Length: 358
Ligand SMILES: Cc1ncc(COP(=O)(O)O)c(C=O)c1O
Image (cartoon, rainbow, N blue to C red; front, side, top):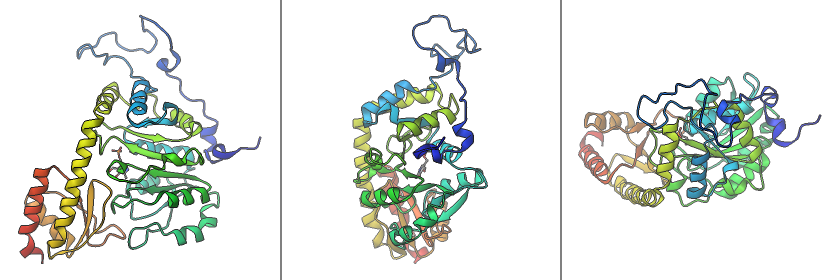
């Protein structure tokens, strides 16, 4: 039988998989006695059903995502952070030791780490020195990218660590030229004015959009990420994920957070306004060489001596991210926008360091 579209990209062992069917997957309808899943009938920690396995399909949480963000449940799969989703994509599409993924560095470091863990090679097309997509190289190298080995191409927009977004027409062009899966990681999109690539999925079923509740939604500790994709991809992702990958505590907490959209929007506005305050202060420091425009909740800054700035701030109890050893980010540090008070403390500390760093 000839395989078509997405099916052709999926690893043969995953295509042939008979997925694990959990007790709670098989049950639907009404019942009062649950003796199907080898659970303990006792909830020792107080009446919230912690003795029962959680919903493997995340039904209520998906409904909340649909209500808050407008993504239909059949187009969503949830993971233990979007990191789990990234790993799932490798396990579904990339044959260890054979396949490759395309990365556009400098970008989120986990793509490389999950490639290494899954024994998958990298094809690298660096961003330009101004952190734009190198469309010329991408177009020129498309035959190589479409050699059948490159299964995933990661575009992080807004990009971590540079903070800028890529234009939707460019993302659309890359995704339509590339025959594999284009993964658009939108972890920071809530802080950006740019339109989501989710709108492109309708016309291109090889696009997967990643979102997380760790940033704007304030749930980094809870670990919730999700993918928006064509239902065929979503079905395979459900087959491959751990059946109970999100605990009941995670699912219930996320449902509560998603009901707080107005408060989240207020905080996002506050973070953006603080980002602009920090960004306009930084150029006044003599040791700052460049402040990169950011569409995220952090700012990339090039300074005269990134190591010295990092250790000097550490001595004052302030931790920033030293990115100076990342290719394409020489001399750079990444600063997360904190609360107004934290930012005041940061700016005061940076000012005090004028003498040490200039
Ligand atoms: C671009 C990007 N994607 C994904 C993640 C991971 O998010 P999560 O907390 O959902 O695993 C991060 C975390 O910093 C990130 O920067």
